[in-house]
Image (cartoon, rainbow, N blue to C red; front, side):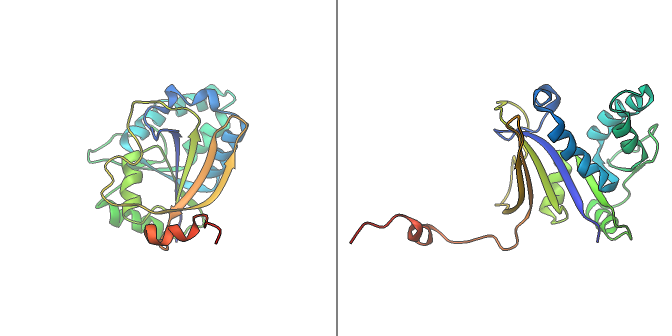
Length: 205
């Protein structure tokens, strides 16, 4: 079964909205490599409409311009791009299509396609939330920036129930950004204070 990975820029106080307003000072080669690794392991992008519109409004022109980011822009252009939208869409960016049918059923079918390549997500926060809740997101890759933004949509707003995650890797970049990779934790620990107090320092007898 194919793996779905989601990559998000996130502030220390959990904001994921408009990262272009605060994350660029922290972008370095380490972060570029982390982003490239996710995209290089995937042949399909799954995107919400707003994220797709943002990408489609920038990356095709960057590919044509032939600048330093042309190689990455071409990767995005060559990838199959599947857009989740309730509206009919017209596409000008190559290899783009609209997801058809029920979200959960359609994404499950995507995961079952005979491919060894991942399905990557970038941004698309509401979509990330829905796939996490449905147990369809395999890896949540957070690039946590050492800045409190204060305002803006947060990743885990309006969570109906606890969502236990298991940390599977971490790396600290020279800029202070921490790259954390999580997956859903089916075996999350349980217990209350009665269990926790056994780990507290014990007074000498």
